[in-house]
Length: 141
Image (cartoon, rainbow, N blue to C red):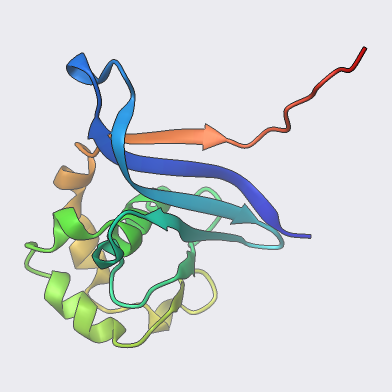
């Protein structure tokens, strides 16, 4: 069985100093769990937020510290387009729809690690919220 266990939402801070959460929401990124974990875009306010044709990826491991950064690069790339390595990564990806940082690291664009390094300072300031999926229990009289 496979299913989604959590999601991340990226947007702008709503209300005074973000007191109202995110508004608007620009992107949703879902995390799926099965025999391996995968990440994919759930909602993109603008299709240009996606890097190339990427639809999903498998991180290097289920607790990979770069997975959320990789997800932002893949599915909310607008803030990173001006970085020096962005165009190289985009060209190296070509028509790629799926990346596997775990089983096929040789197929990951060679410039990806450099783009990660360049992107960290931007990534640290993105308004991102996380939600863990739990069933809602209802009791009927």
